[in-house]
Image (cartoon, rainbow over all chains, first blue to last red; front, side):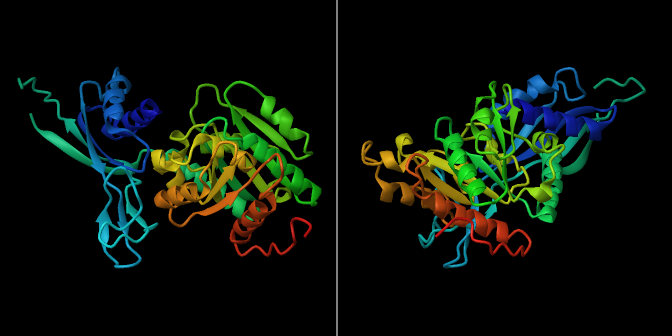
Length: 120
Length: 232
C-alpha cells in the first residue's frame, strides 16, 4: 500500500550511490513477508524515478519466497502461497523463518557516459 | 557503451531500522516495555487500551500511550481519562507508523517513569508489518466480528507479531465465532505466538494479557519485574 514511499527510498539509495552517473538498472530483493507487492513497486519506481538520475532506468525485482527451518526434521524449505507455516516435508508447524523478510537494494548498474561524445 | 555495476546490499528501510534500533536501546535502558498494537480498523484497539491503561494505573503501575489516528484526537482524549500520559500521533494519509514519529512524540517524557509504553498503530492489516518501532512486543488484535480466517488472509502481520489478542470475546456466541478454528488459523501463520481472548466490555482476559505483557517487560534486560500487577 505504501509502495510509492518504498520506491522513493530505493531511488534515494540508488541516486546517492550513483553520484552524477545515470542509473540503468536497480536490482532489489523483496521477501514474500515484506508486505511489498513487486508489481506495485515496479509501477511506483517509474513515478519515483522521474526527474532523478534513475529516470528511464529499470527496476528488477528478485522475489524471495519464505523459507523455514523445520524444528522436527531439520530441513530448510521454501513455503508455497498462500502461506502456512508448516514444514512441507513433514507437516510440523515451523515458526523459524530463515528467508522472506528481505527488502533491500542489491546493486545498481550505471550508464557510463562517454565524454568523447561517442555514439551508442 | 560500458556499464558499471555497483553492489549496494542496503536495506530499503534502513533509515527506519536504525532509528528503531536506537529507540529499542533507549527503552531497554529505561526499563520501558514498548508494545506495538496492530490490527485492522474497528478491531477495538482503543477500547482494549482504555481498559489496559485503567487497570495498570489502578494497580499503581506506570503506563503511557501513543495513539496513531488519521485525523482526530478523539482516541487520545478518551484514553487520557485513565490518568496515564497519552499523546496522539496525527498520521494524515500515512498507512502505518514509523520509528521517527515515535521518537518525535516521546519528546519531554522521562522514559524511566514509563513501565509500559503502548503504541496504537494505524488500523491496517498490511503496512505496519514491515516497520519496526523499537517495540519489545508486537500485539496483533483480531475481533470475533472479523471472522476466523483473517490470519490466513494477512499472514505477514500475524507472523511478525509476538502476541495475538482476540477482542470482543463477549460477542463470540452472538456471531457464532468458532474459537478453536480462530486459534488454529492464528497458529497456522504464527506457530509460536501466544493467544489471549479478551473483552474490553466485561474485562475478561485483561489480567491474563497483563501477565503476558509483564513477561515481555521482564525479558527486556533481565529486569526484575516481580511486583504483581493486578490484585489476585
